Length: 506
Image (tube, rainbow, N blue to C red; front, side, top):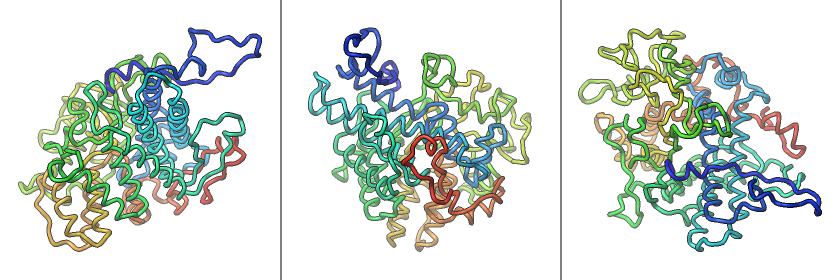
């Protein structure tokens, strides 16, 4: 994926025809009539669908998506440089706030492109039945992933499973949340059946059977379908030599290796977003010839001293959460060193002593995770570090949570201890359900800081109000529930689609 498929990226566009007498196809222009003829066209369609995931404005793992998914958490602060980001982070957003609307658009762009593949692939010649089924499974994975993001962020949304053929076909009403989840489950289930376990090196980064299994388990977990979630996670967490499942996922020995480019696509990764410093030189270009295939996130979050825009900071709450337990050697949790930088003896940041940086807004630390902090600066603005969308650590802790919620905290213990052991923490044992859930919540908070899970975890646990009120979160006084559990349907959609309805809490 990081190599060959980047070359295949094109924008899929449908052009309208002229009158019958003048209707001729220009062979030098890509149209619906001369596309979908070869296997490379299918690969290009898939590449175009993947790349929306890291689009600078609309991508779920582009810079704005990373800011959106993290911004509402009690662990994250976004300063008031970009109005829309500050609004969503401080719970002062409206139906017209731009960033949620962009992500809504990005998800449906991905769905539209996946549906184009599904609608056209049967007519493409020269592809075996087995390979067509694999491409169909891959498109369904991508469609499911976008619907997963839509349902956890916007709740009740329109469902499209084919490409609209007329203007009226675009005007679709919201489907109930349960139906959106059903679509997610169906697509991930179909994806599992058709996707390969692995790819050759040139295609690393594409969706696999393990990724679809993990996301299906996550979809079950978000719906509190504990038994179904346990079943899926068990397939991934049991070594291949012990069970029929063909997976060999494992934790990296060093937590920090997950967040440096040299260790992209590693054994802990089930699915990640491929970033690379190729293509155009403009990381903010959007979808045109100047677009880079990297992201600007690290530069946005870096301090001004090294060419950054210092947009985001860890709150004091997460800074203190990391310090609740020391390692067996009485040191800070190694995840704290990998995630944050603060004023400890010998602390270095971008090859400078941390003491040379000016702390902002009263916070004690700055972001290190996903930053190119071992370089001199973020000068090229384009980061090549892949975003790890689904890690094995997430699988282990979700598996532990599902078991615990079934009343089996003892079975969850070795799963949690795997996370603790990598962090050089002592084993736990004998915890009851309540104590085990408290441990899982703590581990998820520090394991996945800056990975976009915190607010969604709090929502699943019914703890948004309690945890945000018990924090130094800027804007917590504006939190209104259940209103802020979801984003509103963007006002632009309301204005253009007469069938769609607004989230009732908005």
